[in-house]
Image 1 (spheres, helix red, strand yellow):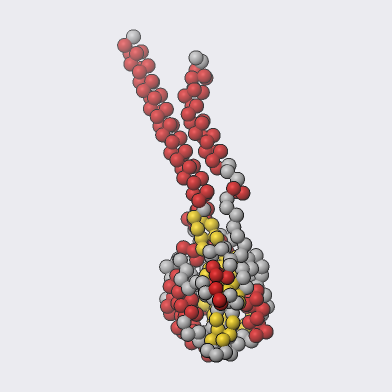
Image 2 (spheres, rainbow, N blue to C red; image 1 turned 90 degrees about the vertical axis):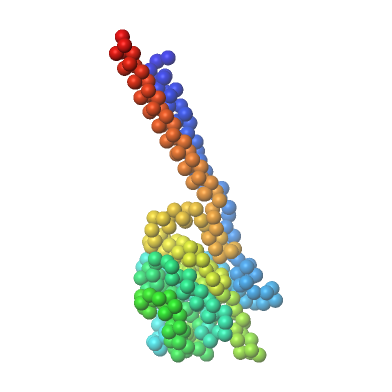
Length: 298
C-alpha cells in the first residue's frame, strides 16, 4: 500500500464522521413541526366554555394603530406610538385598574416575572398597560402605577412602564387590533375578560401572545429578544431560541425537539471525531517511536 493510500485509510473514520455531521446539519428547517396561527378561546382565555365571548383572537403579524390617543397617569394626552422606539419591543397589557381580581393578578404577575431578568423596563423595552374601561381616568392610572411599579423594584420602570386610559374611540380600535374580546356585566358592574399580554415589535407589529396571569421568566425573555429582532439579549439567548420555539396555540415557548436532536447529534459526532483524531495522533506517535527504536537497534 502506498503512503497516500495508507494516509487515506487512516483518515477514513474521521471523514465518515464529518460526512455524518454535515448530513445531520443539513436537515431542512421545513421538517420542523408547523406552528398553528391562532389559539382557541378556551386555550387563550383560560375561562369556562360558556364565556366564549371573551378571549384573544391572535393577530400575529398585524399592526397596532400607533396614532391612537390616550391619557397617561399624569393627565397628559399621548399617542400610543410615543412608546415605540427603535430597537425596543413593547409589552401591551389590556386591563382595567379597578378590576377586583384578575387584572391585579396580571399586573402583579408581570412585575414578578420580569424582576429576575437582566433586561430592564425603560432601558431595553417598554410596558404599556391600557385600560379598556372608558370610565377610568388618570386618577386610577396613577394609583395603579404607584401600586405595581414598586413591585418591579427598578427606578427605570417609572419612565418605562406606562398606565393609560382613554375613550371608546381609542379603546375599541386598540382592543380590536390585538384581538382582545371582553364583555361588560351591568348587574355586577364588572368586565368579563381574559388575562394575557401582547408583545409588539418596535415597528408596531404584533409578535407574541402570552396567556394567563403567571408568565415564566424564560418565556418573557425569549419573547422580548425575538420581538426585538435579537437586538437585545446575549449570544446565549440566540442559542436558546434555536432550542425553543414559540407555540402560538399555547402562548408558550416549548422545546424544539428536532433542533435539540440535531444539536445533540452534532455534539456527539464532534466528540467522536475528536476522539478519533486523538487516537490517530497516538498511533502515529507510537509508530514513530517504534521506527526510532528500530533504527537505533540497527
